Length: 490
Image 1 (spheres, helix red, strand yellow):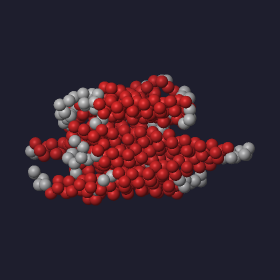
Image 2 (cartoon, rainbow, N blue to C red):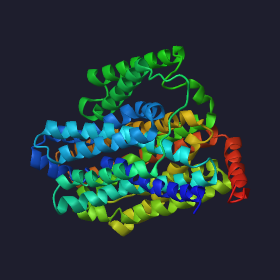
Image 3 (cartoon, rainbow, N blue to C red):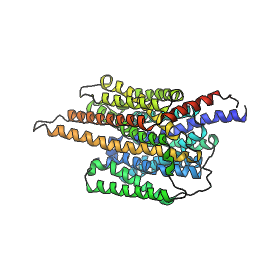
Image 4 (tube, rainbow, N blue to C red):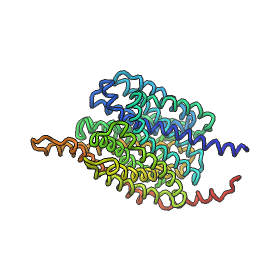
């Protein structure tokens, strides 16, 4: 076997390793949902603080992604990737051994920080390992399949582990996986970094944008408790806006900015990030509300709710593979448009859930449709976001699309949860002294949230048609065709 053949074979094995790491990142965001009641009982959480088991992870993940991408570009993508894995392993171990609210929330925040380091560095490695075109589409198809399926698998594993060995294993499951991936990474992944002559971390820019994004996520996820019109929420949003404005001013004057704004001249990259924001806003909340509907309305146990996600997870894997093939043939714009249309249709279908429904009548059909849409949309937004980006800025591009999806997810969940809670409260208030039907009120709240999610997805479809350039989409097809025409031994 020649050195080139050995390299060609090894990099696909490396992709499997990188996908395992991304699986951990996405899994951590969803696996605790089903375990929350057990965690709350074991550690004597207050109802308001229990949400921070999820929010602490989202907060640090969304806030530090851009910095994680910058660190990967400058310090070495493999080195930063391994450091993130070790941090996640240590934080997961600590989280499982937590005996108080504060300990668990702090450990979950550390998990999110590790994820913010892993995700952009891993995606940047994928973008630099596989050349733009057919082979990168295949690699990102696998990446998208794992990312999408991990959200559903998290609920499934969360149910099994919570009902089985206990909620601690929901957190400990990451430890051996992260350590194995970190041990194998030096053998399978080549080190790479930006070769730019100017190696500057842009500390002022990093601090301002990380603080601004963290405050934005915090304000959003806590708005349901504090109130959208409260002094806290308005004050935090204003402070976040001021920090982000300061970041923009710093970047415009910096010789080596954290985010060179010239990258946004790539209209397709800008469009992909805008659509990625809306994909996160519509779909992340979908998992949340489906889980609540199954447990609070249909009365499913944690393991029953988890098993109900299995068809959805399998469909995501299939759809992501199909999307990767279609992008090579027709370009990313039409595939992304189809994906957003499928997501909108699935959420409208979900808005018909009923109190006396069931898995076959209310969950299976729209779940499969949503999974197909997620596979199409997630893969294509990722491909579009890193296409045509220079090697030294691949970490930045990877951090941007991850940030868009995470911020979109936090914002979408906060807004749609407000819609659901408002509708539920209105139904309960209209009972007029009669004994309120809480189950029906909850169901109507979930219906309203799904309609809101469909609206977000439809906006994503519009932005796809307006912002994603046809010329870039066609050029991607031509690039793939030229790559296929090259001799295999070239």
